[in-house]
Length: 449
Image (cartoon, rainbow, N blue to C red; front, side, top):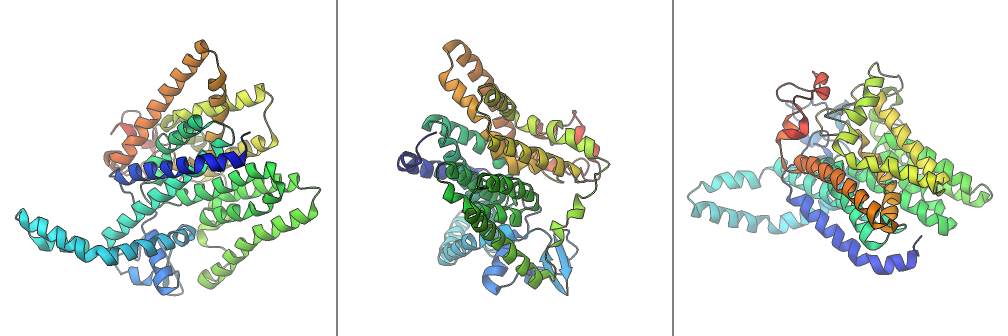
């Protein structure tokens, strides 16, 4: 394992460059999706400008029946968790500063251009004064930034095991061969912030191997990840059990870990009481997955192999994760932490398959699997390690398989980032939520639209 001191000194510039490149590519890709995340930016604005979590100022009689809205005590709130919107607040503040200082100049420039080509300048003024369009722009910028940060944090994880070139390569696989590109960077879904905090916790666990005293802080990002997305309760519980087991002879460390882990959850509960008059929002109720759905076994297979939602169909690069687990067992480098990560992935798969709406609505590919993508990528690290020391004859074969799987994955997620047709598949010719059989239709494959 590489020295973390050398790792920081050598890699900070590369990490910054990686951030800028990935962010720029994400931002330039034309697709913007704002489905479940439609009110994420308005909620951030409400928190920033009014100091509350209601959406009253954004709701009219025309949209009060929106599935993304719930009404509690005559106030309107987002049905989806507010953790992501809290994270978006500083971004919104910064973007507002830029917009307010430059909006007048942008309008004048656009009016000048439109008048020059003989078009009505009032049309462009209608666009620049449309808050909904700016919300979409904000959403895309923030989602792209958060997703790019996820790539950088994964680069740091990979650098604990791989040299620079392989770590960069694997990070770029995460950036452009997974749903991070085609889904998480296209709109401000919960998944981007969820991944970011899960990665921070995972990276902390790797550092804690060398400096155990750091382990007391790992529960903080785990708790925040749960606040962002409730399925992260799996990682919170399993990772905590592992950390407590590793600290079983140090009661002071266990106590500090528990206090720091519980603190964000207590603040979360207190905030919920003030907003909803309940400890948990409706979205966090366990009854959503408490009973095994009649579609459970279909969902188990579908989340892996469905032509429209299968993890290995949309990102066949993850086939190498299975090989990576085999390599760790074969080389006797399989650790307790590896078992915890596998248990987290497996449990996540079980939970998302219990949800009756397992295909994730109007989505693209395996969106519900997105949160554990970094854990799956972690198991590709042994494959890269083997490639780096393999003899020429076997190395070429492994690289050929890698390039083939990478090429397919890249093409599929490129389509999701640049082509609206693959997203229109969800509603044309039939709404997939009303006709879920389309998930298995091999004659109308989503990514080939």
